[in-house]
Amino acid sequence: MVATFGVTLLVFREIVIPTQTASLQNEVADLRKQASFAANVAGEKDGAIRQLQERISLLEKELKNTQSKLAAAQLTNLFEFGNPYPIGLGNIRVGNTRDRISQVYADSSIERTAGFWSVKMEHAAWSSVTYYFARVDGELLIYQILFFFRRDATPETLLQKLTEALGHPTTPGTKPNCYVWSLKKPQELFVTLEADRRAVSFLLGVRKPTCNTPE
Image (cartoon, rainbow, N blue to C red):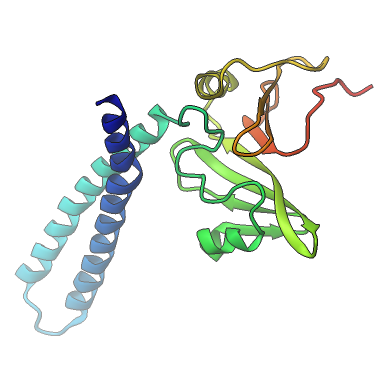
């Protein structure tokens, strides 16, 4: 029963609400075009234009309400238990090719730099994600991912959410507020959170961190 409820909640949060949001956005954009066209057509009745504008206003209120529901759902549960990838951001994983980024995200949201690509997110919790890649056997493969929390979030919140999902971290080095989770399945990965950084973020990758204070 609990598992069924969890799956239903996940589907509602990750599929139903985003689909509703996209549908409303498309409908509002379409009605705006109709209203603009009607306003420029000679002889078009003011009543027809007014009806379109009223419909747009109603849909915008519905869209705002749906977006609020989506934001609340995204902030409530950031991770699934045992999974280091944030909910909704697991389509690209460590070990994927660089090309996978272009397949998942729109080109306009990707900032390309030699060695890494950054993606701006339309998400209530995450502001951007940076994918680092290196050439392995002729292919550019992602070896670590840096997830950036929203600016108004706190390191304590992210630490709490990661601990709930992955268990208690270790503090392997001398650097204060540096936390590490070591994962074995489905592949060996390390999650690193440096809670004293100005930008609240965590790193997911194959390289073992040290958390040592620079000399």
